[in-house]
Length: 127
Image (cartoon, rainbow, N blue to C red; front, top):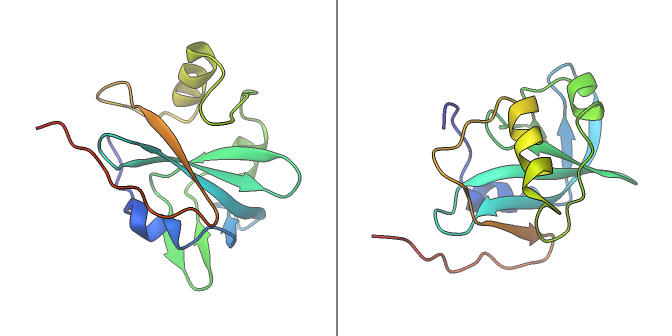
């Protein structure tokens, strides 16, 4: 992982609040935090109003009463289509998003979704 990320427990507090793009546009509310279940590392944020788009969790910072992404509005709005429910519909869609946003993973994550109102999970760790 090349960039720093806020902890899952930090990002969980921001569900239901605004995410602002790098260039200052309100992208909607953080609806969900998508994280690696085995490591607890946040990978994506699901944001939006009517349509949920994913934004890399890396580089997101707390700024006043909202989060700010290091990704522009144009990049967020023009991301490759993906079908994300409790995980990506297929591995090809997932990899395409990783490549599009230049997100580098050391291993294939076991993704889980933390929706607004969900409690933080008990995380298992591989020792």
